[in-house]
Length: 455
Image 1 (cartoon, rainbow, N blue to C red):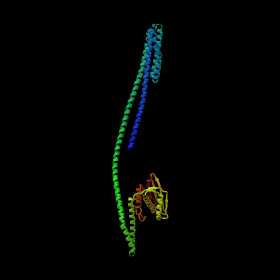
Image 2: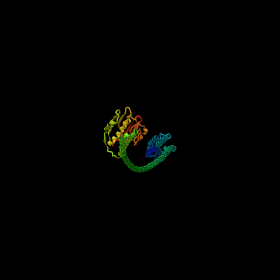
Image 3: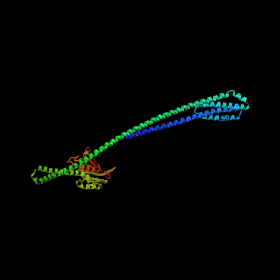
Image 4: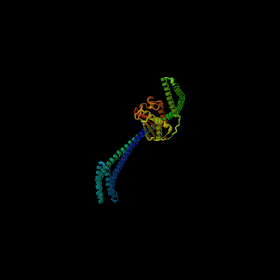
């Protein structure tokens, strides 16, 4: 897995964990809010029960104060409690509507409160007549029993609510603990992932630094090797030039002497000796052509490129005009409009001469030799081509085409010295382009070369 994918995986994992934390946080917050709502609800229920009990006690205290003293001022708490007590009952009944057990208790409590308040009303009315009548009613003990029943019912209801309160608080605390555990575990996991990502990045950075150092060392070695290669090439070119130049003198002498021998002593030579002498002269001539080609190839490496805008269509037309004498009359040449280039005109002329000359030569044995010249732009380069329907070649030998003295056809089939395509390759390479070919045996070949746009 690449460094980018590892970091992306770590980021996605951390993001997923953060989403899980957010989910549990939201869930815990909702649970906490819901629990708090129920806790507050329980406190409200307990408050309403407490107020109900307090109202019952206040009503009884006010009634008894009036009975004992006969003063109307003691009836104020009684009257107020009697007015408010059933409002508290209504409130607590509404708050506990989801609890059937509490609803049943409240119904029973409401009955006892009604009886209790009615009994107090009777005692108050009896006291208005005389103390003895009220005293007799009190001594029955009915009011005390009713008040005790009220206290008992309210006490049971309060215990029920306190039990629910404890349960709800316990659930809330358990949820909080669980959330804290999950939160801590997930944060720890994120921290571990970040540590792992950090070490991965650190390791990759160290590897990158090491690779950069190795690349620098390789670049240094490469620069040194390039300098050595340039020196070797310069030495080789100088050697080739010297050898080719030095070979021309004895070869010229050989050619002159053989010519003199043929002209002045041919009458003394037999037929076979004369043929051998002609073969010597022919071989010397071929050797001279070959040496000139080698000199041209050697000089090409020394020649400075002089680039200028080149009208390719005009250049190809001039080349075709120059090659007209070597072109069989039956050969058809089709030339498209060619895109211009920035190149050394004289060297580019040599490229077209070699490529078009080869197309003419290798298609000369066909009944209807045809040559097509065209170009197309591909990205930042222009690709030119010369296509013929001639002898072609086997593509498995294509890598040998542009080597010096490399020929895919025998000299008896087609004349040549194996230098032309090597010259094409060197010229195009020096211009920053490429050269290649496609072919089928006996179906023709297409030679391509590319030049950078605006180079």
